[in-house]
Image (cartoon, rainbow, N blue to C red; front, side, top):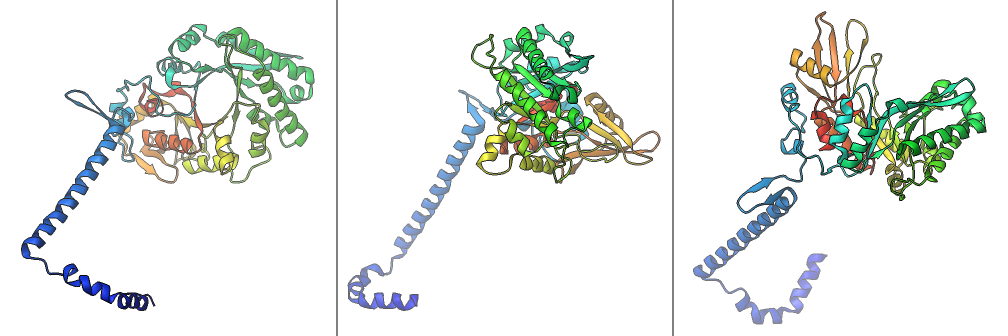
Length: 443
């Protein structure tokens, strides 16, 4: 049909075409053909040359800067990317060698979302790392406090752990918020049912923040309430949520004297579901919605997926993704909710016994490096979990599997957090040896 229409159009205008045919289709001379061919080649060559130059300029603008005589490479890329260390085919030798190197970048942030770093008194290296990278960390949570019952009273233990000198050093070096962790050890049936005890708990926390000039707290209570078995009861669950909301609202009503511009902040620790379907005791999307306005952030413990009784990866990436999907959903609302999530990142690994009976458990950096030096293992990449692991046999010929975070596994989890507009929470920065593992997060 199209051909017929085209023929009719040609016929109807044949007289017009015929008057120009001799000019339009006049055979070209050999010199003319050669000239046209050269011109076409020149145009094609010019196009690709210009395209290449533009592409090169765009790339250089992103990753290079120029001085009068030299080109300095990849200034915007983190140190570990410039060294091409973030890769699947890592080796034990690279880990050992690069562990001695430290990024010179201690000020520019590459991960733009919030970073919450936990610090424990029993891994004191974390205090020094926090000072070194204070400009890269937005929230620091030293593990200092427990709120406990003592007879009929509530007592907040932990001030002896607090280090005012360290806090002063942190504030001189950067703007990280100091939010000590408070674990709610008080018996929940007493605390949640008695109004006076709830008010006493809130007052103790706020007074400590004022006197010690903290920026708020990180509260951990949900796992304790799960252990007491109270969250299966809808009335107790509502009381639990109401207490957290009451605490958050009370903290938000306090203006910090240090700057007078912000209020005390509350970050709440939540655990991930262990199955595809939420259990009665799990912290779910309805709980997140209920606390959204009263809580400034949720520290999501997306690690410890495996155990000696169920050996495997520390924090499979698909599990992290499904947990986020379950909690915040999809669409524009998920972005709003995602901004208050701190995705958990483990700075430790696990050494599991795979034969001769179950066993094993967590290891930290110096133990990990010792295993690398002793066994010189071959790293394997487990694609489903996006984690590296290696196998070795101990002196009793028992087979072990070691899962430990690498630059590649950490990089993929940072990217996952970015895709949800979420921050990250690190447990905990004192577990690393020097700065090798920390570099990909804090470079």
